[in-house]
Image 1 (cartoon, rainbow, N blue to C red):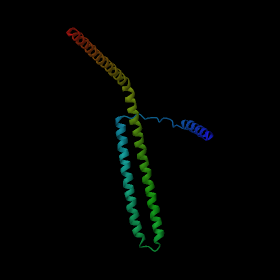
Image 2 (image 1 turned 90 degrees about the horizontal axis):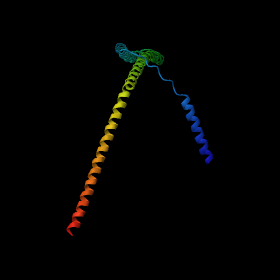
Image 3 (image 1 turned 30 degrees about the vertical axis):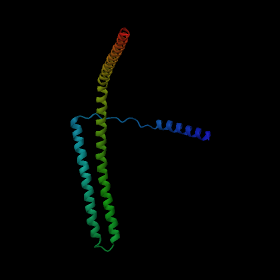
Length: 170
């Protein structure tokens, strides 16, 4: 049983080591101006719309061709040809959609890089603010502890005074 556990641990360790070797390299983030971003967004939207239209046209053409096949003698052969035609049109639409997704991906990467850069620039200020807040919290805590200690001492003094007064009255 111990041997099985040892083998399992060893295989997990080797697997983790290999997984660390396969890590993908970081992606180069393009630096885009606002105009370039807007142009890419417009291009992406146009490509998405074009691909959608191409799919709709492929479906409409297939339906028309398929309906026309019923008028022919070799119906199944005609339907196969209509299906091949539809598949070809859908592949073209997928290629256009792929290009649009590639543009979307490029925009997401650029936006993420800008966000990371902004976060890196704001990090020292946030760290300073956090340190300032921590110092403020520490001082408030010390003041509160001092007030508690003072009240404790006052309570002890009142207790001593009450005890002394009680002794004097006897």
